[in-house]
Length: 185
Image 1 (cartoon, rainbow, N blue to C red):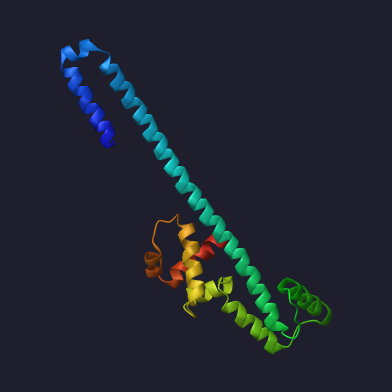
Image 2: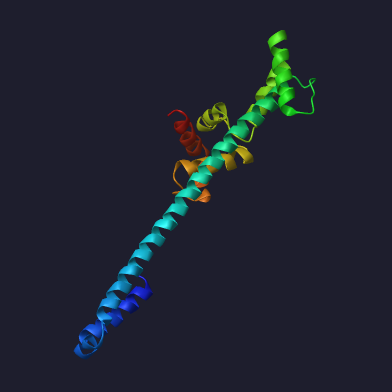
């Protein structure tokens, strides 16, 4: 109950307790109407606040999805660039397509290039399934960018129930498992 509603109800109680005030005008009816209108406005305000919070969560989830797609695209571009660094183009997408075309025509690149592509994937800001599995198994930890991305993703997945610090305290394997569980759905 708001302080305004409490004040109105207190005034209404005073008027109801004095028969002479009740007889002079329609004060009681006016106070009842004012209290009802205030309750309606407060309910509407509460719903609007919830709608804003829901919209913010939806926006955050959409931003995370966009970041995941951009992370996947960047990882793919970096992996292709590591596999075939001799192909250069001013447009990263065009360069990636040229690299794919070369691989289709000539087979795979040399083993060193494949290893460089794998290393690029393992250090990409958005952790791949292999990185998540390695973190869960205790074979490696997230790098800084991967940890930041994973914390953001788990915040969305858990409905913002925990702060980033609380999530980080759960540990990398726990975070990785949450993301992997979501991917397996």
